[in-house]
Image (spheres, rainbow, N blue to C red):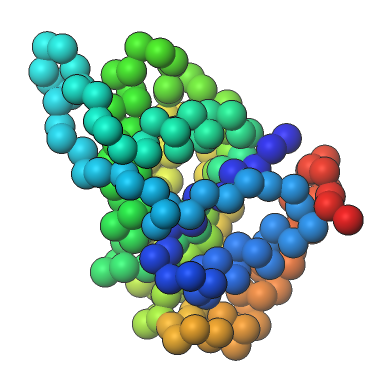
Length: 186
């Protein structure tokens, strides 16, 4: 089993990244920082006869990497009650992949598992639930099960360590991932 973490935060070493590092401590994985990738907003051509025009950005490289992994971890701060703009652009472009003749995107995504790590500052365990539901519907559409999620409360850098509940959930998920037969580093 291989894990790919898709980091949606725009802050280097922010609370979202710190939470994901705790979840994946000692677990072999690859990480993509979406903030370091140029993924342009979708130009909707779903109903255009020729389909989508090629786009000169990093999306194809990222989606090829996604398709090579069994487990995907979507890590994002809560931005206005949903995922970050970087994460949203990436997911919006799945419409393009659904029409891409190079692969069967939906069938390949259905072979994967997803986890979601979310960090927000203002009552996130309530206010981030629409985000979790939105991602669940998105994953359901491509047949990819949402295996679990962690919602943490943090705002300023380093606040994540004050959310004892999220830290315990992260440690539990780390142990589960290690038991799942993943190669442990170290």
